[in-house]
Length: 471
Image (cartoon, rainbow, N blue to C red; front, side):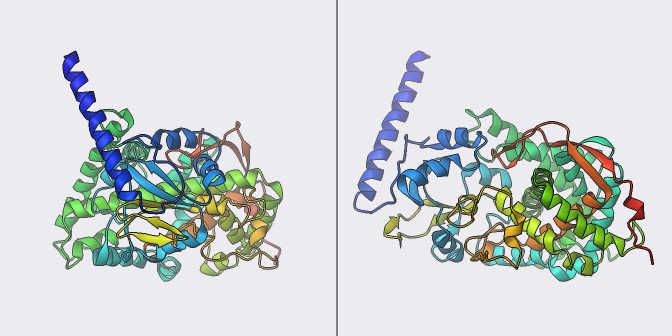
């Protein structure tokens, strides 16, 4: 047995050395961005993972930018990768999707999302599915159909709060249109899926990845039952529904159950998890910035005072009047950086900024590194919503502020996310006062979140039912 293991490891070492020599020969005449590829196979993956488990939002990139500059070479998740913390380069990556770059993510993410997820689709299929998703989350649909339901569901969920709540958990319930045991069980499984995103995709060596694969299978099985049931119902006119799943089932493209399930898994991760997290971070940042919270309360008390009814629904004109709220939303997205960046793969040798990115290499455009760079935002790592007010001298180029990505893959639900956060903040500040139940801090791996799910003590505002001005 020992001799077999010895031969196995000797083969691995020999193969790694051969690959390293081949790689060196292929790229010796190219001017690669500075950096290091680290160890064969593993590269700098372990350094990246350990760095992001600290309380510094960008330790891996910060160190390398300081040493090599805003564009550098590394090797993570099994592949050589060029990292960019340069806004012009990031924009170049985003706008040349399908021309010079293909969408490409680490094997761990690709395997867990599924080959038919919107994140991984390419070409005309991606364009059609992206358009379909956007059609259910544009301003017109939100204004005419979704705003009333969003406000009602958020208000109903907040009405049940008392004493100590784990805000991150409660925010996830706000995103569920059908809360119950089934959705809670599903949520627990896909949380395990997310934990496996940034691991080496080797089940034999990674317990986290192995657990994530198992959880992904359970999520897919649960969603497949839903799809099959809805497909059967849609065979009759009475059973057809005018929602996104109904549109997929009724499409002339005749999507398979597997394609629809992969699409739904990606939507769960992209919409449900990220939006509930940004809600939590907004409250955390506001709690730590009392002047901003006071100004936000003033804005929303003014809106509520015109209603003469604490339960009166918000209207589109109310949302459009939330000027300071939009500053808070912008700043929360900038500092929070739920989407830290995007991966792409070079389709050909690409010359940029005096360097060559070899064909087949991954590139990573870091949004977080740009958002937290003091060259672009003064005192960049401080939450300061006033920087977004129109009467300030602050101007922000579109390639510097990219919380929803850009190019043909810009997040199709960006407007819906802003509305959800704005409505949540309205109900939160008009119904409750609160304070942290204990200290909590941000962590950035495998995704941005609070370490303890942000426990707070809430108390209903005594003037909640009395905010109508005398007529």
